[in-house]
Image (cartoon, rainbow, N blue to C red; front, side, top):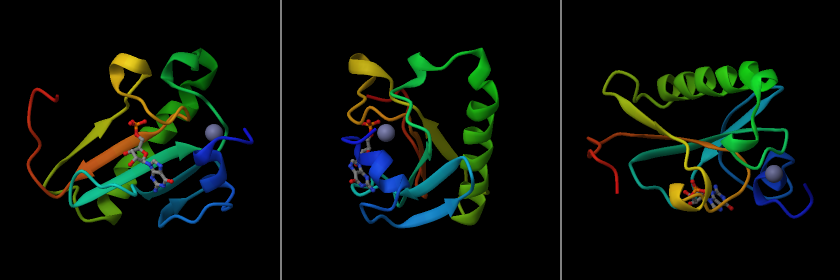
Length: 114
Ligand code: 5GP
Ligand code: ZN
């Protein structure tokens, strides 16, 4: 989508610190990290949020999770543990409407989240 910031990151029209890339996803450091390690994994295809995903997207969603797990290993946080977050919609706190998986680690996480 032409006015989507994460589409532009996926197309390398906006610079980012890319951690991992394959044919379906891009993972890059969050510009405003909330933990020592904070990476976002996005599908290259524009999808506004989890709400727009259907049964046909199960493979892509699974791939997103497995890529997140791979990124956690690459970043050296897998052993200590980490957290996946997908903020969805207004009450979910979503601010960028291109589906993204947050991977947070490098410090203990709190529960419940805010
Ligand atoms: P959300 O609140 O939608 O779940 O998360 C959006 C995330 O995208 C935020 O953590 C924010 O810091 C990050 N973000 C927003 N714009 C940019 C950008 O231009 N580059 C990068 N690397 N991260 C961004
Ligand atoms: Zn997009």
